[in-house]
Amino acid sequence: MQTLSSAPDPAVSVAVTILVILLALTGFGLWTAFGPKAKKLTDPWDDHDD
Image 1 (cartoon, rainbow, N blue to C red):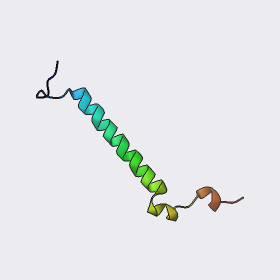
Image 2: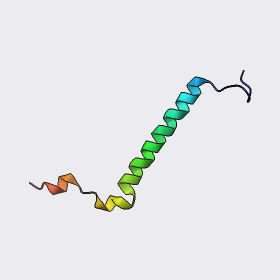
Image 3: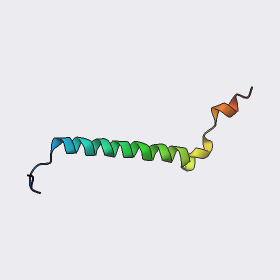
Image 4: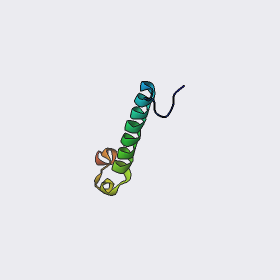
């Protein structure tokens, strides 16, 4: 059993690191899609009307 003063389990550290990276990438994607610079994005399907 772990106490508060013992070192954390390496599996927990890896899981938290992956979770933080995933949340950061999700936040960046949302910021890119809906943030202030999103007005400059163009729709490639609208650019090529057939």
